[in-house]
Amino acid sequence: MSVFMTFRIAFKALGRNKLRTALTMLGMIIGVAAVIAMVALGTGAQALIEEQVRSAGTNLITISPGSSSAGGVRTGFGGNTRLVEADAAALRELPEAMYVAESVNTRTQLIYGNMNWQTNIEGTNIDLPLIRSWQMQYGGFFTAEDVKSAAKVIILGANVSDNLFGEGVDPTDQIIRVRNHVFKVLGVAARKGASSGGMNQDDQAFVPYTTVMKKLSGQQNLNRIYVSARSADEIGSTSQSIGATLRILHEIPPGEPDDFTLQTADDIVALRTQTTQTMTSLLAGVAFVSLVVGGIGIMNIMLVSVTERTREIGLRLAIGARGSDVLFQFLIEAVVISLVGGAIGIGLGYFVAWFVRVYQSWPTMIPIDAVFTAVAFSAFVGIFFGFYPARKAAGLDPIEALRFE
Image 1: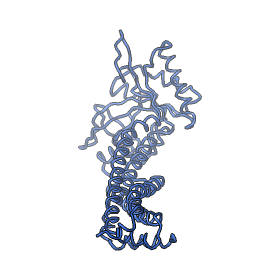
Image 2: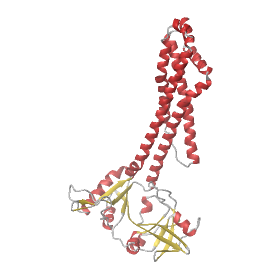
Image 3: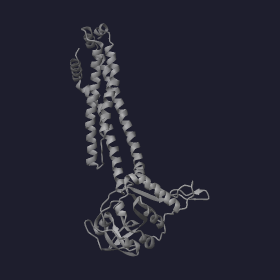
Image 4: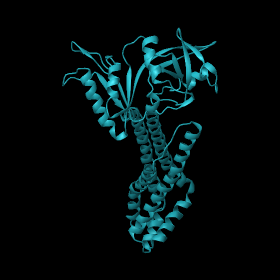
């Protein structure tokens, strides 16, 4: 029997029970759609996290206080406060460092007229907008002279400006109160959105770090130091140079742990995406289980079909059809159910991803390898779960099959 005739008989057999065929496909449709949708959501979330982390700075390396040890007792992360201005000054001399910015933080109330808004104030220097590729919406950033003189000048985040002055208003050169000090607004930073940690980057303000240390908080140490490497390829070597320099400055003996922590953008991305990848893998695993359940449904229906068509199979074998022809026919039926169901499932998965992206504002990305994997798995399920019923049909005795009632 020709291959064309075998395909024709297989499709004709499926067409005789359209509702049953459609319901058998349903398991594959749901399984493949779930795989595509889960992968799209998970991949989109990872891409969003990477974008948020990258937006925090160009080739960024963040230096934070580490743990300190006294009498065998370690205080843990942040327990040491030995980041000082001299550290930043030394790092600025490294040839690998393009930009260096000190950072000190305090939280307080900003007041303009009868309006007020509580926000985080980050004290920094003129390199911060270069490190974080942060443009200005209105006005300009403060100068090196402002940092040196601890000037009472401030840059507002877009959200802070909207709450104090109203949306679309340029507050440049306006005077506001910060605690009991009078500050001049130099400008408004362009909108950045949420950071990788979920913080609204537009809900903060920037002043010279010397102003925070001398007039707002009184602290003597830095909370963080930001360093921008000259290129992405030099982040590793820059981190090593920073670590060696700080160990010398902090007089840390060989073999003793660092009293500071270095964190690169890649480290932050890996940390943020670990949970997302775990959840995506878990949900994709559940979706693949539904594919297996769909395959069991195909096997069940094919076994029923073999029983129903026993006399037909016996007749075909009696007039000269080979067992391989019968096996091939039933195998084709199972694979067709799987592949058609898989194709519909891919379309449904794309629709779910589109719906979530448009109506839930959640980024989605569907890697092409996920589509190929879903198609290949669908074909495998059809062959694997269709082989036993097909072999059972091919192994029927023609005489016994013709006598079957």
